[in-house]
Image 1 (spheres, chains in turn yellow, green):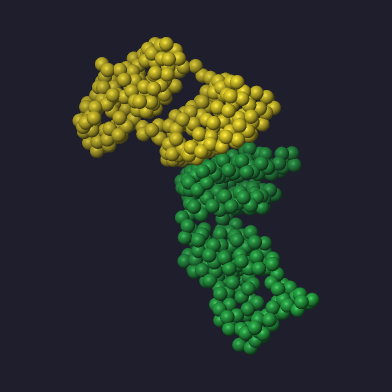
Image 2: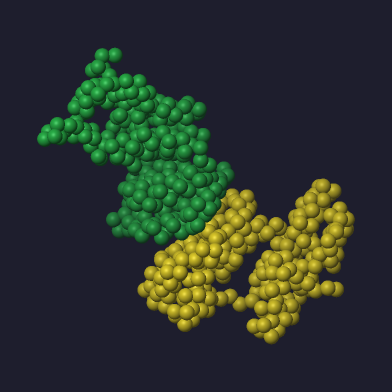
Length: 284
Length: 313
């Protein structure tokens, strides 16, 4: 469930004009920017951008980029992009940031549906004149390259069929690869990067049943964990506010006995904080 | 026609790619029993003389081959009518089933289709076979070819015109070094070579191909010994030459049945794309026109169908 609170009927022309007023002149009326954009869904935001262009002959995003700054600017910029374009930008940033960014690539490739990943790849073509896999490949080596390129180029089958015998044999392969240093990593990479999600779930269940531990725990330790940072907060909130951030909040509370908004609010400040909390459903 | 001429015509009707249905109808269809016996006695590779019991019987093996020739036209029609996505998905599936000798088809499909066409084939594959292409390629192929082939079928290459020439130059150098060091590290284990061939755009790779020639003096595909890598470069950088070579090999007399099938495959899959350029290249390479070669080697409806397809370009 989404956390974004957006009115059903809005006027893109009125919004565009109000934003132009807020952005012109010496200072910037950040409150208005947050009050409008923080309460518009993806469709409404694209309408506003279009109206702004028509009325003022200027790209709203470029204007926002020049008037805002810091984490706030980054969050609003990403919020304004269409989801596929946004993920392309996130992927590019992640690739450039080296080992700190790999989990973002994994996230984009694994959480999105195959069609959504495809849309990201197309957006990446348009924005950077290269393919996503090209850039991932040139910035990684060895098994990590194989894994990440395999993940971003996958176009997994989406059906519900499960081959139980295969799930068991591939769970054993994963176990061998993860536990033993000399394990067959290429086979493990093959399994993780090509099998359908349903088949992988069955495989992970076998893993848990046969080898006593959850593979997610193991994988989390295997991929370097990065501490909380603003970029991660922006990324998760902006990407999930219209999808399932509410569900994420519930899981977070169950696991940590602290509300996600409170935890986030402690780490960030200013207009950035106001914007993020708005997307998380905070009403003024 | 004198009987000897008819015999000759009928033997011809059964030889080559496809069968000459018209001759079978007009000549064979009117022969009396003595004439047919004469035919059996005069074509020893199709019939076996049973001297003890005084009759001639069809050679079983030959009859099986004959079935393929009658069905060649039907297969061409079915393949031509198919949606290109289904066509490519089925070609890949068939190649995986056939084994290593057919893996060249995987390279062909992955490297000569546009990014959207390859994507469509991947979607069709989901629908037809309940697996993803990369899943099946990865789990069927265990040898050294796996890395390259999985990477090729997974590509979604940039298709624009922007190319960084310095990068192309440096990657040509990487390839040149890799080839020089092949005795230390086999080419199919070289991640950089696979990265370049499987992720870079076509335009970029053609620039690499050009720079390689300047550095090494020879064409990149000529310097690659591994067949799959050679095919990859040919398909990506010089597809019309690649297809001309495949066609020429298919049009020889007495080729194995898989090579024979590539005649249908290439013509059906390229008739809407670049068959005109392939015809030109074919003539450059072999001094004879492709339609003429087909006229000599193919028969009947199959021949007419193919000639119609390539006349469209």
